[in-house]
Image (tube, rainbow, N blue to C red; front, side, top):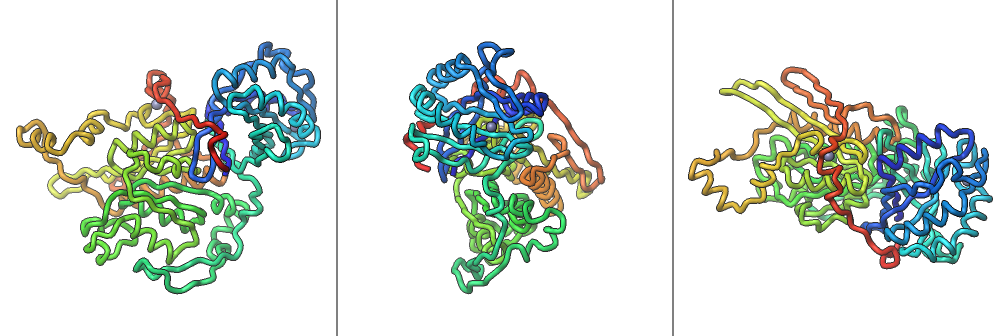
Amino acid sequence: MIRVTILGDVWDSLRDRCNQSAPLEDGGFVLTRPVETASGVRLVVDQEVAPPNYENRWNIQEQRRLRPTTRYKSKVMGESFQTDRVPFFVHSHPDGPPGFSYADELMHEAWLRDFVESSAQGAFGSLVIHGNDVTGKLWTGIDYADDQHEVDVVNCCGSRPIRSVRNLDDAVPRDLTGDVGDGMGETSTTNEVDPLEIADRQLQLIDRLGQARLTSAKVGIVGLGGTGSATAIQCARAGIGSLLLADPDTAEISNANRLYSLTLEQAREGTAKTKVLEDHLGRTATAEVETIQDDVTTGSYDEELLDCDVIFGCTDRHTPRDYLNKLSVLYGIPYIDVGTRPTANDGLVLDLFADARHVVNGGPCLWCLDVLDPGKIREENMPKELVDREVKDGYRRDEGPEPSNVFMTTMAATMGAVQAVAYLLNQENIWDEMVVFNLWACDLQRYATDRADDCVCQKGQWSPSVHQLSLLSF
Ligand SMILES: [Zn+2]
Ligand SMILES: [Zn+2]
């Protein structure tokens, strides 16, 4: 699968320029870094090549035609070589066809050899913007037909993120045959189920194409406790087609007060949380479920995460949330961070907070929002003996596990899942970057925040992976 991500600043400026020029076509050249994913490649558009002369960047700019100058193209070839990026031409069709026109195809064919041969990555791509849809192709060699690949998914970040899926009509759910497990880990009967019949009451809200947007999506959920299990089950029931569920831990009896679908038997036996959810979803939903029983910070399943359309962080530990925040900023995958926080005094409940925050490249990250704590990250990564000694010596309190209950975890999961679904449906997410709902006091606080200029996400200290396209198979 070929995914393209356009990072926030690049997309906001491209989209604004194209909107302003309409009905004339507009666009520009961008550079992308390829990174390997479990199913292929994600090409991250992280910079636009400024034309040598902005006023005269086009030879032709019409309603149905856009041709850059030779100087502009030469500059792109030079920069793509120097930066080891794949060059892409991006242009709008304000009232043209949703995909490439015949003239576009001829233009690509004429350009192909020059771009491929001058690119250090040996590849060239092109995208067309038509309303809320961005479609395109990638060439990984100079043979116009044989080296051509369709781009499957384009996700654009920034102030108005969108996700565009190729051949969405094909993703409209039809009869599927699901293997239905009996909850004991073995497949028993095979039931024929029609996902559209399951979705019947929701189809009246979002229609078949909307449902197809959900079916075509892959959502990653890291942490499968109270919030993670509630998120997974809601996503599956809403019709998300593919779920990546990850948690290193096994269930305990004390999880049974909030971990959805956990049986007491599984809790007593210490069943892996991934297995608990996999068994349950196998019996109740048609979603494809992939599970990973490992800690996200080992990096062992980065390639699977890079294949997701949205990632949820459902863990209260700060180290994995820092990891996911960084992954989201670097690769432009929308990240939803959910959490809970109660306070009580002598058995008197004061607050039950459910929090949801979203991170989309171009907006604030979790560090900008000031929700990650470097002290907590330090503690989480300290050897246990050292923590025990500090407790013994009175330098810290033995805090034990955080208090939690099912009301907070369920509410936080729902707040996050709603935002993910709004994004996958290409509908505007009007939630602020951070929303904190105190269920006990029925009080909702919204925090609309900008990026912090002095934040680590703005200083270029994080370095992304870049892969050689020629070494990847897709
Ligand atoms: Zn065109
Ligand atoms: Zn930041």
